[in-house]
Structures are given as C-alpha cells and as structure tokens.
Image 1: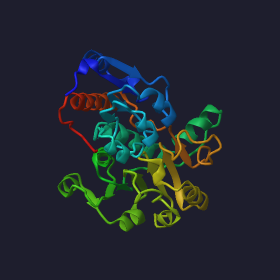
Image 2: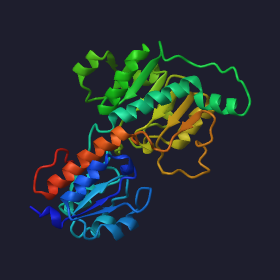
Image 3: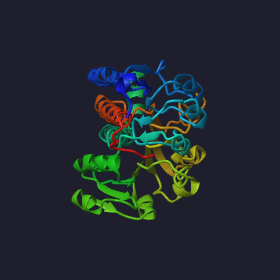
Image 4: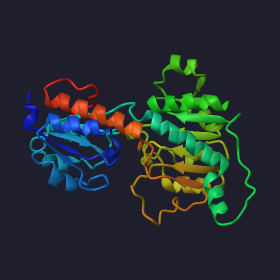
Length: 322
C-alpha cells in the first residue's frame, strides 16, 4: 500500500470542468499533487510521455494511452477511465507493466440516452433544417414524422440501450433490440422485443447503435449492412465512430436507402473540415458531447476517483477491466 500523500495523480478528461468542485477538493486533499490536463482536448501519446513520468495515478479521458505513453509511466499504478470504452488504452501494455485499468459503467447512460432521444426527434422533425431556414427569413412547410407508431431498433441493450428504451416507452412506439447477452427479464418488463439482427435491420424505422468497439464491430455498418436495413430508415450513432464505414454511410444516404443519420462520434475526432458527412443535408452532427452533462460528468468523476484512490490505497477497485 502506498502513502496517498506521496502520490501524484494526472487528471485529463476534457469534461472535468463541469464536475462537482467537491470531487477535486477531495482528490487534492487525499493525494500529494494533482496535475490537470493543460489542453482542452484529449491528449496525444507524445503529450502523455511528457506528463506521465512521476505519476502514481491517472484519471483518463479519451487520450491515446498506447504502449509508447505507458513506457514513460515509471510509477503508474492505475488508469481510471471516464466512461466504459477502453479502445484508446493498450490493455496488454498496461497488464505487462502491472497497471490496473478501471472504467465507470453506467455513469453516463442517462445523458447519452437523452441525447439519443433528442437526435431521434431532430431527425424525425428536420429540426436543424427548420431552424436554419427560419433564421434565413424563409418559412418552409416541412413535413415530419411522429415517433408514435414507428419501430425503433436498438443494437445493444446494455446500460445505455436500457435507458433509451425506458425513455421511448412514452412515445408509444415499438421498440426492438438485438443483444446476444440481453437481460430477458428486463426486456419483458419494458416491452422491448428481442430479435435477431436481420429482423431488427429489416423492421426498424430508426436504428440506434449502443455497441462497444472491438474487432467484430469495427465497420460493421457496411454497404451490405445498410442494404439490409429498411429502405428510408434513419441511423443514430452515439457509441463509437469506428462502428461505421463512412463511405458506406455516404453511399446509403446518396442512394436513398437511408433517410438520414445523426452522428455524435467519428472515427477521427475532430473530423477533417472537408469530411463529406459534416455538410451533408441528411446528416446531423454533434461533437462527441453525449456524456458532457453535469450529471454524467459528476457520476464518472466520482466513480473514477474512488477506483483510482482504492488502487493507490491497496484496495480492490469497483470496476476493474485489466
């Protein structure tokens, strides 16, 4: 067990500014030194090489925590990640160096789910186009869709998928989900139909992605995948940008197979200014902000801090993944 007052902790999530000030007061009182992200964005591997030496704990955001960065971590005991995604962390390199990695499952589920519902409504009612046209002096007669009576498909019924399903019940729509590990009892209680992937793709008017990024899911939204979706369906992605093959999505929008898409995440963030999806009239884009709320930031911050301090104190963290 380490003496906490001798520890240095690096804190890098870009959303920590929204956190309860008590969180940082408690952290600063518990350890010897807290070093904060000097930028307003996720850190690169090279930047981490300059910050990790001498740090015992690391509360991480979406930084590039690769083997090169970890090689510079001469004292690091724990990486406590905001959120559940660990695709930016080289878990094998962490294991080899004896570094514990933790996550904060469920902490941002409500905030992400709320954005999903907002994006569904924005797509259905063409809200960005309506607002832009009205501001320009036009008064368009836009025709929208109701969510009532429509079929919403969820790929993934984990913490976030469940929160989306709960919120959609009030819209009187049909909710389908595909998840090989779904909680069958929960799905029955909330009237979510568990179906195979093909059935969800074929029947959903709106499809929302709630999947982790791994070799099986990378670029799963391909031309073939989109071709199996219901013609004119809408796609929402608040999970990981790499789930989608961007060229396939663009093709689906241009061909009319897809009615539109809403994207909070991209494979490269921020995307290049010339990225064709940024200006496509059928696409709504947001800057990976689904979890950037006071509620989510606080929940992730407290959970990450507690697991970080637990490891430094020789205790078992609540949500270890490596």
